[in-house]
Length: 353
Image 1: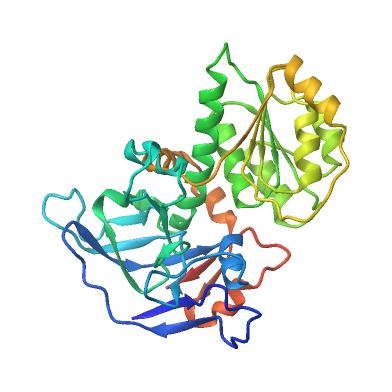
Image 2 (image 1 turned 60 degrees about the horizontal axis):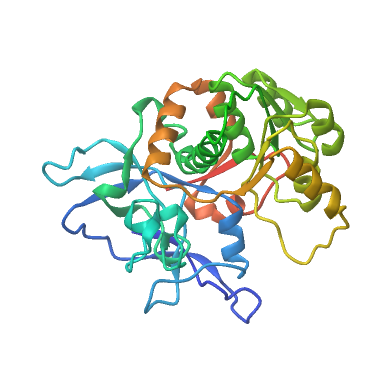
């Protein structure tokens, strides 16, 4: 079978081909595993960071890692009594709990691992789903509604968003909590899917991004949300949202969002910032506002089984035409370099297998 592989950390260290399509042996499913025909993998910033040598770890004993954590495929074989059958559409969960395990992993909350010894398909010490065939343990496979065949690769990013909303709900429950307005910063896949879940919750949903044209403003409007391209400080100051889902990782945006939420507002950070960028902020004013208004800022990454189930439900309830608009390009495996090169109007690029 063909697979997209990378040598983590090789970029810039004399390797001429850190990423390539390789021929690998077909996998043999073990006890309790599904054999899956890969249909596609979504491409995201994490994949580009791994290829760039900034992140990622190959499996023990190997120098190369099969890429792909935004999985989607069709079951070719399933164990008896597993609840899965040939022809089912599935996505594979990314993270696996650490073998120790820590207290969180032992309770199924492996997205909150305390000791960092978790592994991740296509990212950290486990081969990913970027191959024509792959296997997955039945307990880490999630069934996808058949009507979502064209957009099944949205499962993983939607699970990340579902976790973010889950964290917001849990923190909001510390007191009376009936949010009315949510502001999403960033109109990439995470931001747009966060807006989808905001709309599904009946919230007054707003999205802010820098672009003034291209597909993103119209995608937001067609969802029934309001799009903004003014500076984030102006937007958040005018709206005073109860909830902010931050999906850019841009330091200035993060602190502007924190500064002007409604009383006991919740800011959930999902974007990962690059290091080395310094800001000048009024730390005293930020502290004063957060304390006197009972504000909360939280970070959220990855997802567990509960969040994948919530993602499957959210996508099944969404308008399929709208979801299809999020997939801006589909690129075949042999032209992987095109998929890995970002274009101006990209939302979600899928590498077809």
